[in-house]
Amino acid sequence: DGGITQSPKYLFRKEGQNVTLSCEQNLNHDAMYWYRQDPGQGLRLIYYSQIVNDFQKGDIAEGYSVSREKKESFPLTVTSAQKNPTAFYLCASSMGGLAGVSSYNEQFFGPGTRLTVL
Amino acid sequence: AQRVTQPEKLLSVFKGAPVELKCNYSYSGSPELFWYVQYSRQRLQLLLRHISRESIKGFTADLNKGETSFHLKKPFAQEEDSAMYYCALKRGGKLIFGQGTELSVKP
Image 1: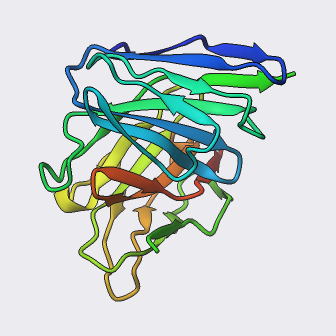
Image 2 (image 1 turned 180 degrees about the horizontal axis):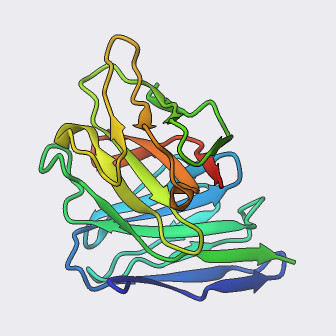
């Protein structure tokens, strides 16, 4: 393992608090992604970033925010506006993120962070 | 809208039996499809991609554009195949994942 790391492994938050999940990669990948994994719903894309200082909303961005100030880091903040934040969060990275650059856009995943709101 | 559907939440087979995990997609263009697998206590990882026409760990998947399907097959299931399997469709620089199918191979 290694290459892409997430911390912490488990996170507990009180209602009304913002919390930031860390994602770091040393694979020199341009693109990074955040997914939310819920039982029976698969993986849903929250935000993604194809290059430094740029990111786009995914399918369920409401209540979340991200930044991409460095190539190797893509932190996700779960804000108090997220109505149902308890979930398993997965970060991923890939060599290319732009459509058409490469068809072999394999995404490498981190170990995940389980967030529980108390 | 682009969508990936895995109709079975759970698939249970006995060791040595054939297995087929179903995946259907909706996409107007030329699709690029993948299967990802997550073994217990391990990270989600790529299993195979349709464009490579490869067989990984005995698994194959054929793209059927007429039926808009990309089913994952293995002729003889092994206990170590027990895992969560996700079908995914590439859309631009992103992946759309299905709901996932848990495969349980019993001894």
